[in-house]
Image (cartoon, rainbow, N blue to C red; front, side):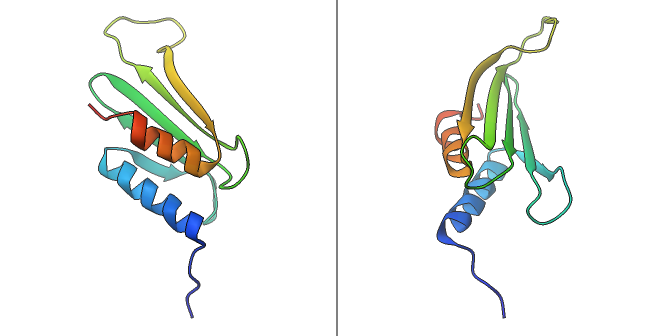
Length: 101
């Protein structure tokens, strides 16, 4: 018998699927089915990252958006936008407010 996901988990999985369609690549960075996920999307102008650690925990997930530059910048690219919170908040923010192009 298979167990259905809770509604919020099912929504989170759908959001991750939509983000994959927009160019994100996700990988599990710790063992186990509930290990944290790290996602990256590289475009000509942006480098977006998502870290998902705990689905319901406040501030357990985060995302950053960095504008790319042809210049070499000491310390790496500056973060132009960031968000932290629970998984649904972070995933929805990135999907809604950070276009791939």
